Length: 162
Image 1 (cartoon, rainbow, N blue to C red):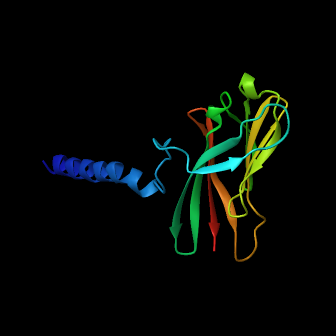
Image 2 (spheres, rainbow, N blue to C red):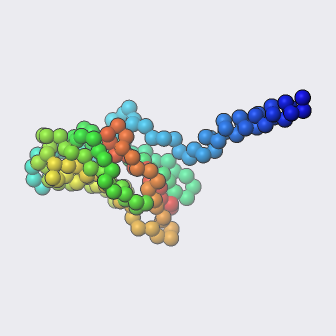
Image 3 (cartoon, one colour):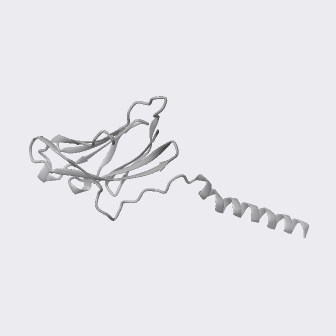
């Protein structure tokens, strides 16, 4: 009987740990493709060829004391095929996708303003989406914490301290 109550107590503790562990290890919610229209749009500066007039992305921010976390999902699926990650480290992430036939001749770029580190480059039949964070300073360290392809679109999560 003593062994049975010890066994029951052990399973009770283990089940509590197993149920609680995911909550302890989760930091931010996994990003999902929004059901809304993209909330940032950039004009494409065409150098040659047939280019889209604009490119867009979904951008969300979560601010906290001492900094913020940002998530960007580039809407490349509107103008290109499936994106793939072609390079990254803690300071940059770069994705490439083949442009739709209508834009395959495009050479140009679209850049966000100085508040965000987003760049779209067009050339060689592809669109390249790059997020490049500024060099760290003692008061403004930054890092890319996640980069993936979501619904054929590039997704980057990054954080910077104030």
